[in-house]
Image 1 (cartoon, each protein chain N blue to C red):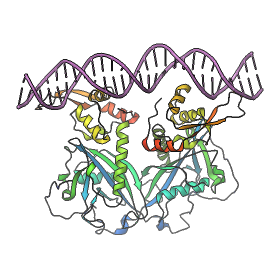
Image 2 (tube, chains in turn blue, cyan, orange, green):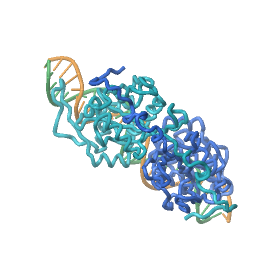
Image 3 (tube, chains in turn brown, purple, orange, red):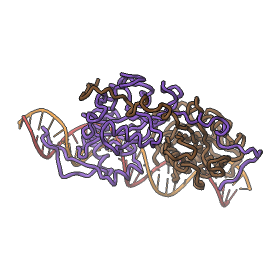
Image 4 (cartoon, rainbow over the protein chains, first blue to last red):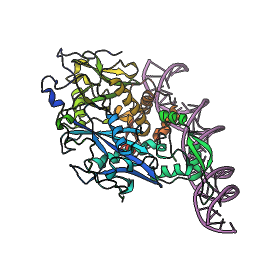
Length: 250
Length: 250
DNA sequence: CCAAAAGTGTTCATTCTACACCCATGG
DNA sequence: CCATGGGTGTAGAATGAACACTTTTGG
């Protein structure tokens, strides 16, 4: 399998460069841990992000991403779900890790490491008004985002970049739409996320050729033009493509 | 920019669901933090990973990824560089975060959060023999990897998946090769990472059309067949493609 | 001259791109 | 019957896949 390649000493060095039994144990267990969530939503052809106005120090009154300290016995992923549940009242939301932020001085209260998560939700379906934090929760257009507390600007930018990557290689964009939607809606969503324009005919061909959508026996109602056919996704195919990936280039 | 959408109470709730001034401050600052590195190398058409044999409890004697606890005043990225410097003697290696692992019971010594990093190095150039850990450091074929301590199996699998993704969208594979190499070497590298076979003619056309490589005025020496032209990458173009990405599908 | 791997060219099929055109609805 | 967006077809260009062929070295 693999052979020992060198053996110049019998020094029983251990994995830790500074063994934890030689310096005070507690010194290595004094980190704080938090989670910050970048929640993307889509409404009227615009990509939005959920921001809060901080009600406490530090950075009281400033804009920030929703986030919280992780409890001593809490799994990080659970923590992220809890934060979003508090905000939207909904559990089991789609969430995915982005990055870890560990600069020594990133939090004035001490050494706090934070993990970024991003989530995609259908604004119409999950209304943050209803949450306990109603006082300070807003959907903000991604193009008009104010400066944020801590290193949250960076966290938001990283999440946005990851979203833009994902949407071109996996069917993630769809979490943002209602369960029945027109093909044009999907196109506008892609245009909002990637900040591009696509040809209608070619966009449709591309999407439909993936066999990802199911054409419903139902059309739009009460529109002042020809009503569009509504679609839903094929859950099975959706997860298949999520696992194996695709390449969306137009 | 954004308007207040609802205001049913004047409850000055703050960002933290359980405010940190209402429960013992220290409780939130008792996490340990570590870094684990997945170091990929390439040698003789095989993708390798750098593993250690642990010399201390817990998991003494088991295979594991190289890793260490982060020091109280140390940046995470610095910590990752330090670990690799100890192993290889080289600083400033290419490294990138993969994921955070935060399960409550993932470390027997307490609540330790770990951040995965992956790195790509040219095996011929950076020899881990020379390091202080020589006793327990081995290059292991990725196909023949033993079971690892902690949740390191998971960390390795995630890193591998991320590498496979990266290599198809950014010129990341090149850190693994010597500064002068033949096109066939690059092809074998791709085949090793992605576990596929490519057509020689088409592979060359694809790679050369990216304008990423500079043809050197130099050929292989002492080979029992026609010597191949050697190439190096165009650093400028390399970083350009790294930033903007490409799509490698063959 | 042979083996072995480097390196190139060509054909055919497939996919992209751009753009023009027709369709269904409300007013 | 008009405005508005939904929905489709097609020609030409560009790209990709497969495979045969030529070249240059050492032995």
